Length: 144
Figure 1 (cartoon, rainbow, N blue to C red):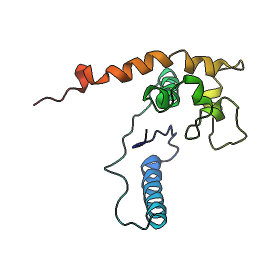
Figure 2: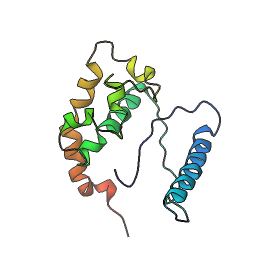
Figure 3: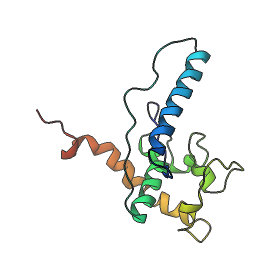
Figure 4: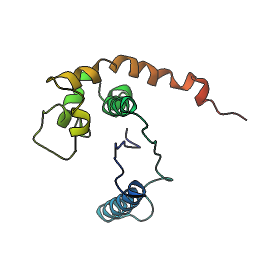
């Protein structure tokens, strides 16, 4: 995903996610521009968001995000996701001492050690297959 990123955020105040994304975009663009001696916007267009309507959707979105580097071909093996530095999956699998994420909501659905890893990896090949053929899906075709 060299041209985008995924965040799974919980909105706790009205317009909280929009405000967060605005501040994040401005701050990171400023940092990047100063560091690289450049000017102008860094991001193209507004961010996209999806409201999560159910616990099942929440879990599937979390899995989709964690599998994305594999399904898009950035990492070659699903096990490489455990060391992929631009993902929170190693944190969710308790493989790192970092605690940048508030993983308790997702983790609460998986009581046994390794259960979340099994949940994520069980769909890895299916998600990768869908990623390969997504351009063939009718809903992605542009109409004239």
